[in-house]
Length: 249
Image (tube, rainbow, N blue to C red):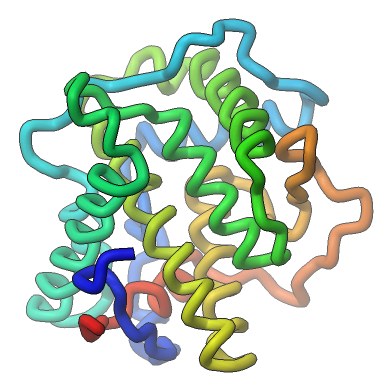
């Protein structure tokens, strides 16, 4: 990862996190709420949601980023903190587009399925330690694209909503992957903070308790033996840790 993106993640201040509005955490649009409901329903009710249409699920690239500002607006800190966090998100999105999916730039399109698969895989790895292989990512992408493509929320969403959704999951996939690598160097407290953040992201974007999710050769599935948390946490509290002000390495 580029040195301009690397940062030192700090433990969230719980008193600050509780002042955040959970309704605005991560993805605040009505479109995203409907989409995560569709994802949750399909994962619960369908054993195999793989997309029969093998074509990529893409959106035209926005002329200026939308997702970083939307995510930063939900940050519970000061205006200066939000500007700093927005800059971090913009660097993460730039890294995704220039290093993770550089070939997409020439087409002027963003691949929603690829970004969503990487987002889910990064958060599941942070929670359960399962590293997604290329074949697992392809299978996961097929599942998620199948769900999204059939979702009424996606079919009626305007271009800006779709663009913002792509940008959010793309930049968060980079952020969570980087935080995962750092947390394992920093110790158990950092790992636990990371897991709370990953749990919040998955709840907000997919709408399922991540303790029920597992990732394997067949893609995403429901665990038969979930380890349930003792009490639910608001997504905003979980997200706050990963969004703390970062220091470039």
